[in-house]
Length: 375
Image 1 (cartoon, one colour):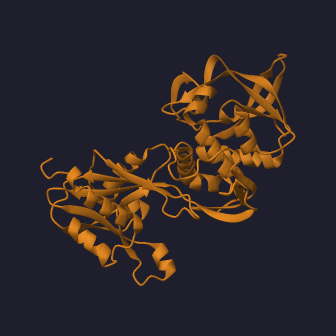
Image 2 (cartoon, rainbow, N blue to C red):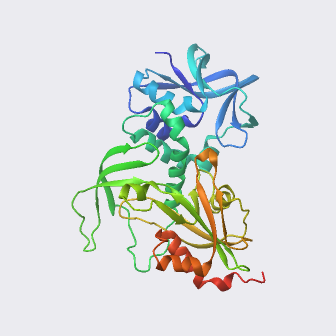
Image 3 (tube, rainbow, N blue to C red):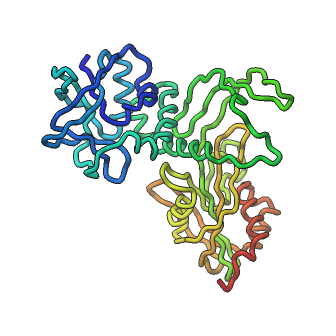
């Protein structure tokens, strides 16, 4: 098996172990003459560039198994990085034929050297979370699987990253300590667009003892941004109507629901940026000056879904309906501009039956004074 020269993020040993998996490989420091490792333009990621007089330093891995080669290809090929033959130089001056993942043609370089420490500070923890999902997937992913699923994997990784930093001072809730939750066994992550995680765990009980082993399956969703647009002059709000498969699968007599503007928080964007983007994509309105309402878990017993809810003042005008959504994303939406009082009445009649929208409308009703008509 031809040795593999690694020069970028996979030099971070924990990431290498997650992606390559266990094996009997051995490695040595090596250099690739006539090449440099630059930072990709607009990204903390690395790329290999041909440059006279430059030397790219890295690690040369021997004895990789076919399974490890396949796992590494799964991680690199979806992004256009292809293996090519090179000759590297070892510390004793000897030269060895090897392979390296070369970047896709036309990829722009920043012209600045790649820094492993800078990458880890900017993106390392998110990358590790994403790699954990890839490594835990059952069955193992191939390159085409990863390419198709990558945006959602990154969205979930960013959601987990935000979650790890979301701790607030506890008033009523338990103040958790290390070891209060223990994963005893994980049987993998499975699914396509959405994922399920199958684990056995135990947790600290309120009496101080640890619980017995608990077998649980959890739905791995994403963070979402929700926006309620309100016109304080006209007294109107914007509602989105769309078909929902959850209602259809439950057997609901009417599987069309009324909701706020909403969408997944993509990897690398903030919840407020996602809300602003979705307002234009779904309803064709430009918004700014978002007001944070609250954020919450809609179904904490079994799902990681987490919603960030915002309100904004917008020029919506008189009550009416029109079509919206992105055709490229197969969105079939009808936008309704109705008075706030009308929307509140639809809660009473149970026509509005989506929890987040109900909570957001009640919040707006209680906070109308924060959006004066004269503003």
